[in-house]
Length: 164
Ligand code: NI
Image (cartoon, rainbow, N blue to C red):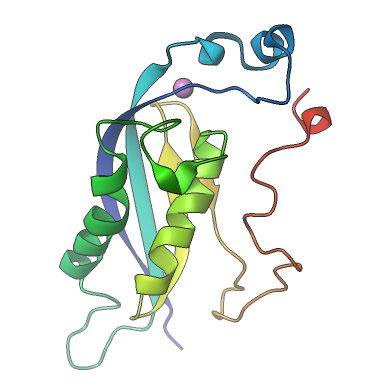
C-alpha cells in the first residue's frame, strides 16, 4: 500500500486570552503571564491540515486539495478569522484557546468532512516559534486506536496541577 500525505495550509487572524476561570487572578497571572492580558492579544495563526491515503487511480489525488481548502474555509477559517476566540466562536465555548486546544477542535470540526483518505494531522502555529500538532487516534494504517471512553476532547480544560 502506497500511503501518501498531502497538506493544505491556511491562515486566520484572531485574538485570545489564556485564563482558567477556576484559577484566582494571581494564579492565572502566574501560569499564563503575558497571555493572561485581560483584553487579549492577537496572533496570525497558520493551520496545516494533512490527509493521508492512497492516490486515487483515476485522478492521482489522495484528496483534491481544492476541496480540502473549501472544507477548511467553511468549517474553520470562516468561523475563526477576525474573531476573539474566547467570546466569538461558539465551538470554543468552555475551552482555553491554546494552540493545543485549537488543534483538537479543528480536528473535530474537519474530521467528518474528510471523505477521501483520512485526516492525519492538524498543526496550529501561533508564531514562527510555537506550534501544536494533533495526530488523532489512528495508527499509520488508518485504523482507530483506543480513544478512551470520553474521546479526544475530554481533557479540554486542563487540571490546574497539570499546568504548573
Ligand atoms: Ni497568545
